[in-house]
Amino acid sequence: MTARRSASTRRRSSAAAAALAATTLAGMIANAPTALAAPGPLTPAFPTVYITQYTNPTTALKQAVQSRLANAGAGGVTISTLGTAATSVNAVGYRVADQYLYGMNGARLVRIASDGSVTDLGAVTGLPVGPIAGTFGAGANADVLYVAGANTSTVYGVDVTTRTVTQTIALSSPVNMADFAFSNGFFWG
Image (cartoon, rainbow, N blue to C red; front, top):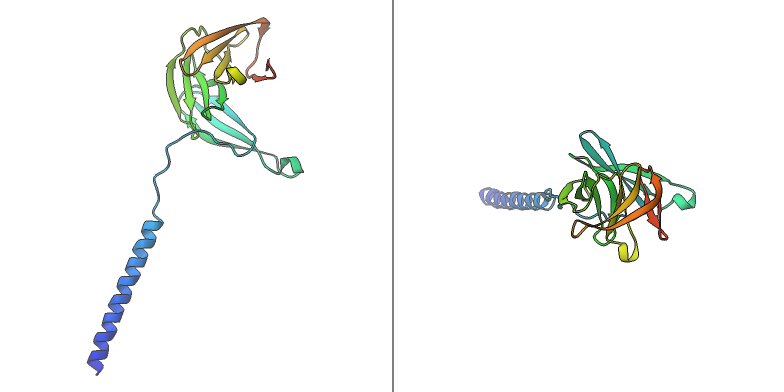
């Protein structure tokens, strides 16, 4: 009777060990690291300002996010780095249509993804300067990236789909601005 009990106990122990191994393996598979998603559009949940900060030879993409409690008296703005590009990026604007940032590397149009990676989209036809300031328009001009150089009296409208200057706006006098925005039919900088 002792021998049968030992064999029975051994079978239960083997079954328990197999069950434990299967459970452990299933847990390892369920908890295995997954591949990171490809960088995509920027999808802010709260009011956000995107900042590019050039430090030769790289550009850091940062975001300044207003916490959901800031208006209630607690909270404020948090600045964090999303990623770093190995190139110079300037004249950046946020395009609502596809939720990407677009900017300029000299006279070349670039698109910036959520991790700060930069895709060179090519040269812009008709752009005589490497701009330092940029913003997207609104309404019928929501897909136009407006750009301007330093100490300039001209703003250029770039169609980001065709990479072509489609508008040239003469200002009444030269302005020296590092950043500007479009609101209520005016450029503010």
